[in-house]
Amino acid sequence: MRPEITYLNEIERCVSWIASWTIHPANHICQGGEVKVGGHQASSASLSTNMTTLYYSVLRPQDRVADKPYTSPISHAIRDVAGNQTREKLENVCDRFIYG
Image (cartoon, rainbow, N blue to C red; front, side):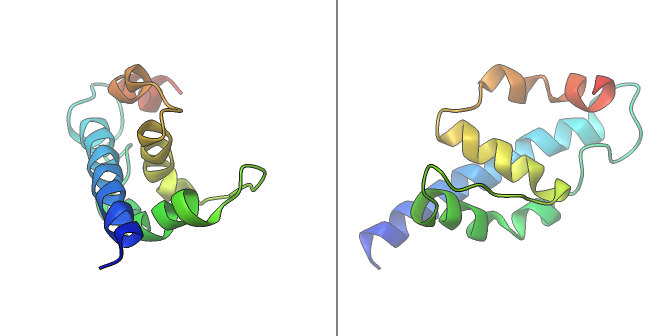
């Protein structure tokens, strides 16, 4: 396997894990919200390969991506892995989903 593919696979594993890590508390741990306020892990996971490849191999800094709401956890995870999202915001996912 080419080194670039191996590198992208490792990034995707991290991105998928972080996305699932933020969805689970919103669905099962947060108090006061509706059921399934955080989404479904499978919806995000289905695009993790595409989104990771786009952000880490194809897109240029001036490019913009309009993604669907169900990919939001993946988008946040990609920004976290790239160092553009704070861990605090990811850890406070309950507040984001309940209070907006």
